[in-house]
Length: 599
Image 1 (cartoon, rainbow, N blue to C red):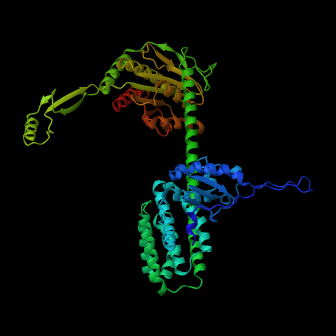
Image 2 (image 1 turned 90 degrees about the horizontal axis):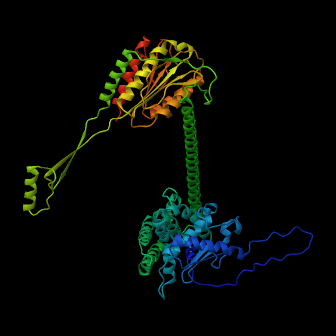
């Protein structure tokens, strides 16, 4: 077992020859240049930069070249302060394709990075030095125990490196199994230390290592395996500088093997059995890592798709808000003209027939509604009571006596005998009422009562609160503002007729929503739609989408219908009025309920 290859004593060899022979003209295609050791200098320097974060040390040098002096894929030389790294671990990548300084580039070569993380763990935690004259066999056992100890210590400070350490186990352990330096029972014990030790520090899972655990228990026996497990578990708790304790654990390891080995038969094909069991473990870990990577990729793709959908939704909502603002600006124009869905003036189709003075009944209804709205908007004052050990406030004699008793008993007084009551006025919420009336030919009966209701609600809202706003839009294919969102009460009633065709409720709702801020909390909000809802599928879908957005934002949506043949718009509260003249009362009641429910 060649665990000791990962921590090396200093050694030097001549540098590799990096020159390539070239023939100027031999009739053959130009020779492809090989990667020179000089080309790997930059890679080694960048690995050194990353080693600072991995190991917490700034005194280390990383050399990267094809092949290593130690023969291992990588090695740490404590006395030289050097980490040696085999460039072959990056295959098939070439030096110009590798940029370790860029965080995340390591995902392109996880096997090489796993080995580098393992050496960084050695650099950070393999800082104990063997004393002069130490038994080489004991030192070898200590270095064997060191393999899983340093990875466990590294995992404590950098738990996200677990994936790379799992990959390094496949890269480092398998060659050691195929070319062991130990034989017999000691070989099986070394495999147990390398595989099951990594299991106990959380690098490998118990289910993944079951094949090695079962084989080692069969070869070593349950008692010896339990003893070795206690030894490497204790070694995992050893401090980085504690050479004495580490060598003591190694001595116990050797003693346990010397005591039990003579009585244990050694299978003839033990190396093959161990290689097969370790191969099963590595295949299992590779499958688990591949499944985790696939799951992570799926989760990343799902999050990316969700983010993209959210961005598209935000962009769509922003576009709708811009369109609604443009629609509201064009509809609520000062000239009172009818506009097309795109905001351009319509040459014909204005349903307004004129204006008239409000009747005495309408004025009385507006006054009653104003009083009802003020009563619904009224909020009681809130009271907040606080206690304190000192004035101001009202003295509570029971608390005062309790405070005196606490002081006499020698304890810290906690009673607070003074009570202060603070009363705050709660602002009354304003009202926002939007009325969208269908002026297609089937809605002629609603014209007069809705015109009256629009004036009553607008008048009452203006008399109730200066911040209250109402607006009414008549819609068919075009949009016409009957009342506008201003703070002034209308002087006259706007009359209109219903002779239009088709419907454009979606844009009407957008204009009312933007003009009255129906989607914004803090006010009693109500949208009244007077329609029989006998629309086409596209017209219905657009209207339902807007209604859902308003109800989600907390705005009440009421649909008034006049005939039994009317359809119900999903998401609205349907109210059937057999008598059109009852529309003003229904709208006034809904507005009062809306402002009463506002918190």
